[in-house]
Length: 175
Image (tube, rainbow, N blue to C red; front, top):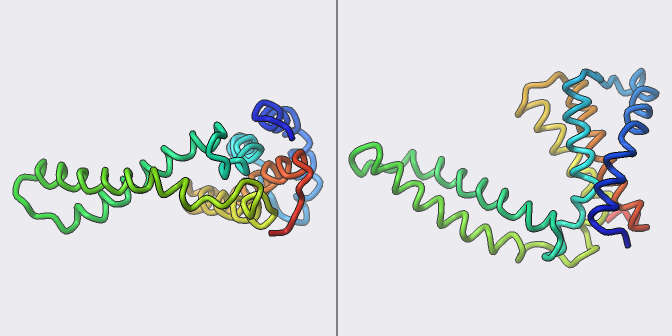
C-alpha cells in the first residue's frame, strides 16, 4: 500500500487532471472555477489524498487531525459555556469557560482515537469521500461565503482527492 508521501505527492501532481475534468463537466454541473475556488480546491484535494488514513492511529494525518478536532471541540465548548457563566468580572467568566473548554478538548483528544473505526474500514469508502466532499461544499458555501458554483467545485475537488487515495489503495468500496 502507498505511504504518506506517495498519497500526498500523487495529490499534488494529479490536480491539473481534476481541473481539466471540472472544465469539461462545468457546462453541466455549473462549477465556478475562480482562482479562489481552484486554490481552495487544491488544498482540499491534496488533504483528501491522505485523509482516509485518519483511521490509523500512527498515521501522520491522524496525528495532525487529532489536535484540530480537539481544539475545535474545546472552542465550541467554550462558546457554549460562556453564555451561561456569570461569576463576576469578564476575565473570570472567560477563564472559567476556557477551563471547561479545555476539559472538553482533553476528552476529545482521547475520544477521537476511540471513535475511529478500524483501519481500512468505513473511513476508506466512497461513502466517506462523499461526506468529505459535502463538508467541503458547506465550508466553502456557508463558512467562507463562496458562490454556489465555487462551493460545488470545492466539494468536487475534495471528493476527488479522497477518491484518489482509495484508488491508490486499490480499495474503491461503497461503505
